[in-house]
Length: 78
Image (cartoon, rainbow, N blue to C red):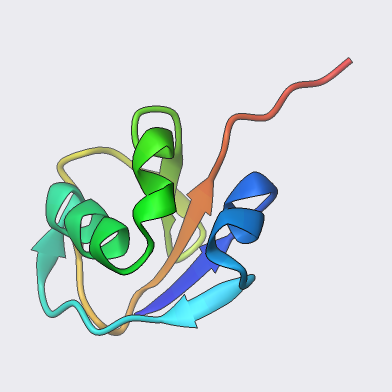
């Protein structure tokens, strides 16, 4: 699975993207795996949206190793 990070999440992880083998997981399982590899992501779990293959998804979404997942932090505008 390709995981894309944006804004401050990219700084926390130290990369704009990573490859992560997860098997079939739901969003909670994906977060557990991400936090196990990058513990600094834990504080962001409650405010970051997940997008699967360029579409926002909810907590009920399932993921596989062939997906591209983006972690989208809150955005503000002026």
